[in-house]
Length: 187
Picture 1: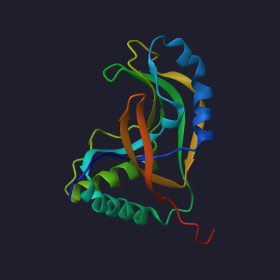
Picture 2: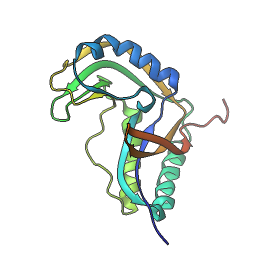
Picture 3: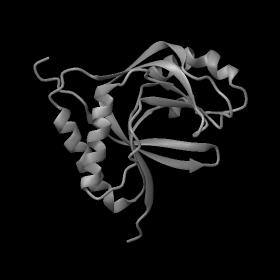
């Protein structure tokens, strides 16, 4: 059997309306940063856990980890919410991103749970501390630090397993599967 490696990550995957609202709020800053590679609007997302390249055969264990995390959070009665209220430039990564200035506990808890569940199954997810952010532009040599952004609130009812493929035109993301983040029972 010829196994194919896939580059995967878990994310909170916004609707096109949520993406549009964020781009509109950040427009002036994005126009002011000069030469940069803007992330296509369709690719905007909030990464929870980056897995890297995995063989096709390992997908069932990845899905088990996701199902375990969804089940653990299943008693929640409200969608997960993240409020982006600041634009920041991360010098080392050379990115401009929308960030949640205050810690987003529910998103951080989900990211931590996914990383633990994946690690217990023998995977090596990126273990950098979680910081709720959406990358807006790459290859930015100088950018704004801690610039206020009119708050943009993203609400999520599910999280997703996403595949990243590199094409001639850039990264192409495909949602492979989704898991519910809250219970509608008794609502």
